[in-house]
Length: 344
Image (cartoon, rainbow, N blue to C red; front, side, top):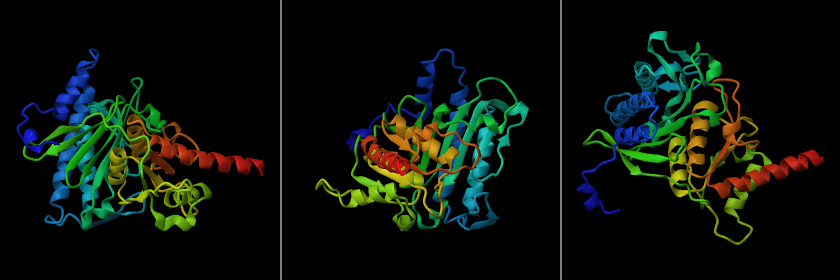
């Protein structure tokens, strides 16, 4: 990349301009989605700013409450949750919100309602705040098919019904990656402008990668196919080089690397947690949506992740996502194990 030439660029594609360009391709559009996205972007900027000064502002300590997942809430979790709820409600374009931090769905009051349902994890990986590891916000957006009183059923839909998904990673830079169902684009926050600039247009995940990402500390609890796959990553039977292990423990950071460099991210079910640990609505679905849009695959161990029909707001599911060929390989191992089970 020619940084000196970049420094002189004056024709910057900001996220606002990008979304307005996309909107102009749909003459029937009323701009509702653009307004909603602008509010999400504002929330991301606010949280990014808070994360950057968390140590100084003593925001890192525990808030003293426990969220619905049984995790002790960090002050930043609480702050991020409030920021996004207020940003989404004030957009006037949402009708129902589901946050990782709140047990029940939030039904927006009638005077501020719109047609969008937003599911989100306001601060994923927040246990990593203290040591400066990348954390992020994950979101997915559904739309109401018709005008009716919103209910939980409006968000308990398969991930393939989402109209958009994305995440914002707060790391060495603040990066927003989003898809509206026509490819994946990445934007980086320019702090001097306070604007997200298009830096990763048309992200495509490599068809096959040489990185695998999994918490090997759980290896003794894994099922056969997962154990066999990781063994093949470390000791390839065809004489090829073994895959490299990279595991950050923050889903946004691990998936971001997987999108850009290829490979596979695994969070399998195991004997301790048969359904894995990742939540379907606001972790598995948005990330699976992005990976598929970038040309990869996402699988639960039983089916395509985006085909899963959730029955609970905070339902969990195993997930294997990443490069097309790598996920295809683990799908083969699960299919073989299922066939053996039927034969017995």
